[in-house]
Length: 272
Image (cartoon, rainbow, N blue to C red; front, side, top):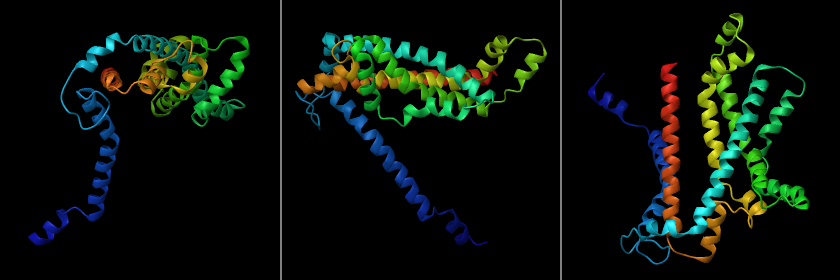
C-alpha cells in the first residue's frame, strides 16, 4: 500500500468533521450563557450589560447584605433537604419492590411514580393550591415540600431502578442462604451495591428541589419564599449584577457537589 493511500485513510471524513463541529457548537451554545454570567458578575457596570466596562468585586461583597437572598437560601435548603429525605424514604423501597417482585398493577405503580416527569409543574402547583388552600396550608413548608417531593421522586426512582437493573445482586441469595435477615441483606449487601444510583438520585432530587420556582411561587410566594422566588422578585425591581454574583456562587456549589459525589461513588466502586 502506497504512502498516498495511507495518508488518504488517515484523513478525517467530512461526516466526522461535521459531527465534531456540531458537538463543539452545542457546547458553545450551552456554556456561553454561563460564561457571560461569570463575566458580568465581575463587571463594574451599574446595570446588567455586556460587555463589561471594568473589573470589580463589589457585587460579591454586597451579597451578605441582601437579607432576602439569605432568607430565601434558608428556605430553599430546608425544603430541599427535607424533600430529599422523604424521597429517599419512599423511593428506595418502592424501587426495590418494583425491581424484585411480581405483583398485579406493578406497571401502573411504576408509571405513577414516574408520571410527574410528564406533568407540567404549573399543573401540580395549581392542584396543590386548590387542595391545600381551603385548609390554610399554603405559604408553609408543608405545601412546598409536598410539591417538591412529587416532582423529584422520579429522578431517584429512575437512577435506583437503573442501578438495580445493571448491578450484580446474586450475592443477596448467598447472604440469605447463610441466614441473614431481609433487613440485614438490604443494609449490608443491596444498599452498598446500589449506593451510586441512590446517591446520584438524591443529588438530582436536591438540586431540582433547590431550583424549583413554579411550585414555590404558587404555594408559598408570600409565606416561605425560596431563593429562586427571591431572585425573580429582585430581578423584577433591580437591574444590577448582584444576581449574577449569586448565580456564579450557585454554579460553583453545584459543581462542587457533583465532584464530591463522583469521588465518593468512584471510591466505593474501587473498594468493592
